[in-house]
Image (cartoon, rainbow, N blue to C red; front, side, top):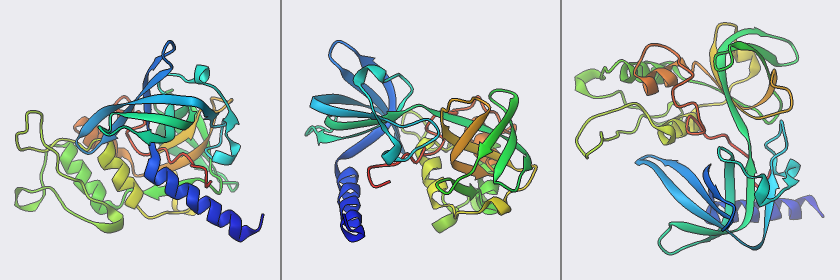
Length: 277
């Protein structure tokens, strides 16, 4: 197949996934009915979505240490686990509460974070991983996305975590690559502001500019998303965000990085690949 035809095919697949695809974290599985419930994190909070596999639906599982769709392996409903990240392509019900899936792609992902201890010339980064309290090697490859929280956004997040507000009694504002912190309401619909939810953080990270390995340095605090590989002491980064202590502080109300605060898929989008990858 010519390269132009391949590009056109990938573009059609991207458009189809954008139009008919859904994604979230598997929160429940019913082996009897083969029904799957996923949790989706949105700006106005989390919601459940029911996934029903159509007759003859294909199941694919992301390979260890890879988020490329091309590396995904044929799988089955039985291999699904609660906590997996899932993407499904199918027909949505009129009420938007259910999807009949033709293709289901899923994988087990890991969130890590800690202070960079060293960076070697090959692009491997050694961190003190806070969740495990053990050294962790983070491998950076051509598919890894590296980003840094801009100073202005870090200051704004720190103020939110400490309960502070921006000038004039309002939170700091921004747009474009440095991101914004969208306003959220406290439960009950009253006015107020709380720490950013997963959707907020995902949007902020998405708008951050890409950086290179040479822009990282020992002492940086980083958050890393990866697949769960075969070696627990090494991960291949999907997304790495430096200066991320401000994100955790904002979510936890200050006090510095705490990896027990919401370290699930809602911290930022894992960026798992679709069929065009």
